[in-house]
Structure formats: structure tokens, C-alpha cells
Length: 112
Image 1 (cartoon, one colour):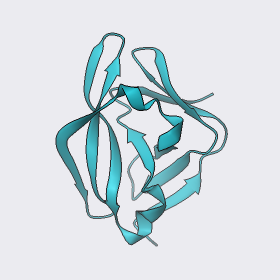
Image 2 (cartoon, helix red, strand yellow):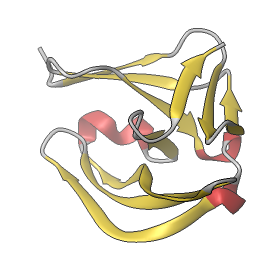
Image 3 (cartoon, helix red, strand yellow):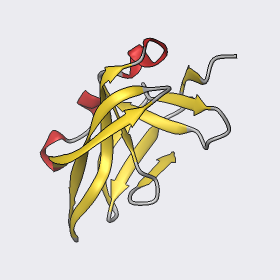
Image 4 (cartoon, helix red, strand yellow):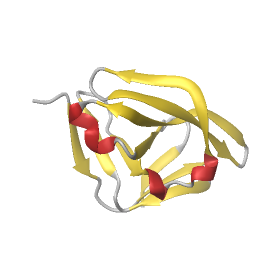
């Protein structure tokens, strides 16, 4: 079995930062990676680009590849490293290249 699996996420998904909706999608993807909780990836164009500020932090994952983090501007201030994107995905994660995922401990990701 592959270390990661990617499926279409059923329904409509939103991401909120400090209560403000910063993205909504019916085209999200669900990533299942080993025994970790699933992660929802949003198409980049479904997220308000104005709320994303590049971070110095990078992402390196044996299963997913390499990427970058973003701070998220929220009504109550900047949320550090709350979003990430794969800029050099592994072969198994290639379909996530133009998508963004969010740290669910910092922002709210939910199906509506």
C-alpha cells in the first residue's frame, strides 16, 4: 500500500481564520497519510490570496515532497505558519501541487 492516498473530498469545505472565512471549495482533496489524521487540500484559487504571507519555514516530507509555509492574516492578527503548499511534490503527491493545506490546530477546516 502506498504511504499516501488522495481522494476527492466529499461536499463543501471551508477554512476560517479567527472566525473569518478565507476559503471555500467543492473541489478539495483529502490526503490520507499512513496512520495520521486526514488533511484537506484546497485548490489555491479557492483561497483568498490576500490573506497569505510567505514564511521562511520550509516543508520537507518523505512521502509528500517539499514545500513552503504561509502565515495567514486574520482579523485578530497574523497566524504563523498556518498554511502550506507543496512546491516540489513527490510523484505520489503530484496532484497536490496547486493546492493549499492548513494546520487544523491554528485555523478551522470543516465540511459544511
